Image 1 (cartoon, helix red, strand yellow):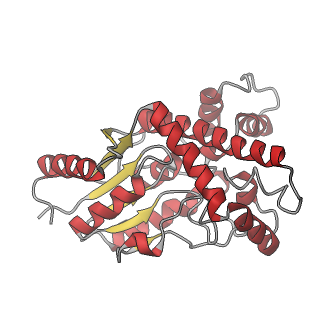
Image 2 (image 1 turned 135 degrees about the horizontal axis):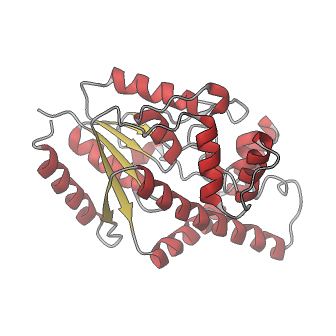
Length: 293
């Protein structure tokens, strides 16, 4: 019977985690994380990390493998993912997450050096522009032209040959209309604050300091400078709205990445009856790949 690598991609808040669990149970598969922030211990609420209960006994890998003050590059992820793909080569594997550069580095024949690995999705336009100027002070790219900034950094950091997929991978994408996605992102951020996101950031800062990942990850970077202050209601609302806006912008960048970098089969998420989405994906997988063991 066919063994399969299923890669579930899409923007934040679209249902990737839920689909990964359902498919893992159906196909007796292991799940591997492809979210740059869920690598880190303690970053749970702000990343909507899968909980013990949600895992339903499914084996999960590359979650909670580093402390927030430890360095972990895309080069490290490339090595770790490939080691797991080799270790579980006789099993069905589900890779789930929205960090496109991680997936591209791990699944394609990209050759990076450890020091050159950067997860460009996590940086703002201004930060990308500063990174370009570090390479070339006279770089002629407008700070708001994100695509050119990313292309410049990518082409500087690795060879420019057309990448080839190293594995037999089926890319499944979840999507929804923009208004629905943005509403869900906004509600998700509200829920994170209700669950104690500010306390999570405070505890992480007190334990590890103002680390690189805590200062760059959406949901953490907006809060970290304010956790020791008593904020007014207006200031708190502004922080929440900033996180929502940054999350929406990130979702747009995720779409752009997956549409340009991977051959993705997209499915609309049925939020009223998620079983419909699961069944559509299952039918596609089994029609495309035969009977999956």
